[in-house]
Amino acid sequence: MRRWRGVGRIVVLVGVATLAACAQKPAGTGSGLPTSGIYKVGKPYQIAGVWYYPKEDYTYDETGIASWYGPGFHEKNTANGEIYDQDELTAAHRTLPMPSLVRVTNLDNGRSIVVRVNDRGPYANGRIIDMSRRGAQLLGFDGPGTAKVRVQILAEESRAIAAAARQGTPAPLLAEIDGPPPKAAPRGRIEVTGPSGPVTMISASTGAPRPAVVGAPVPPPATVAGSMSEGRFVPAPVVAQLPVKPRESIYVQVGAYGSEENVAKARARLSAMGQRASVSLTRSGGMSLHRVRVGPLDSVDRADTLLNQIIQAGLTEAKIVVD
Image (cartoon, rainbow, N blue to C red; front, side):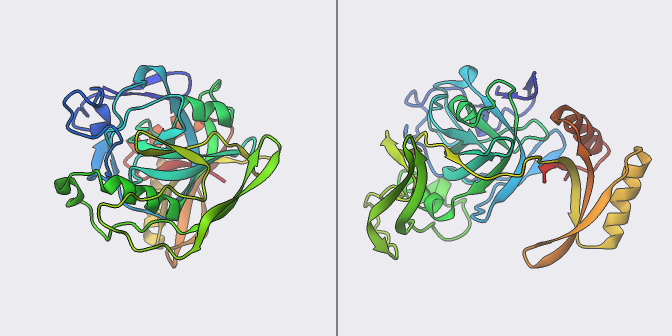
């Protein structure tokens, strides 16, 4: 059973043996899956009273707390059948399709890298992504164990590696996925930071992507530095330095509601716990929503404690955000 790294402690999950991420058999020993992994989204699942809903979300952009996992899972299967290598730039995410590419930015120091999502997790409350050991090292939080981060999916690049993974995925598994097959990424250009400063990579061709040909190899994305390893595209250890606010605050967001009635119910429940909430307007998907938050909080430990209390009180949509 998988363990998830938290703040100075290991959280052991019990009773979730049905999750694919719990598999520990190395690939190539009767798993029936290619070592390059498969394309997988997965069905809704519940951990400690919280429901997670995996889906193809190519608009994903979220802030929160990152953790990392390492030696205990090195060379074991990931949730989509790849082999976890703690020295590659990979990560576990609770809901994004596998594989996909995301940019993770440390909001404390501005260090930013691209990683391949190929696993499920973290299931500890209050974490939005579980980085490989190498990823945590490059972002500068392998020592403390957690960091305030922003996670953004690279949409077209993720569609490209998803299209490649689909070719090695058994038809019965693909039949469980809703929506049209992802399209290959258009060839373009991107600036990354190398040892000698910014480097511009220009692809061999430009313009709209060519129609996919069944059975033909899907080229890796040309807009991200990386290499092929056993049929998988793995991002290169390129660290970009991005501008970030000098002080990012931590909140527990109880929910984002469309009706004032739901806002009032959430605030009443928080008040019964002795917590005062702030309400602010935001827009999502063309809708106006009321965000109910508690904070700012002075530490990840404090946010963890409060989040667990709020979830135990029945507000299971609560999460830690950074703003």
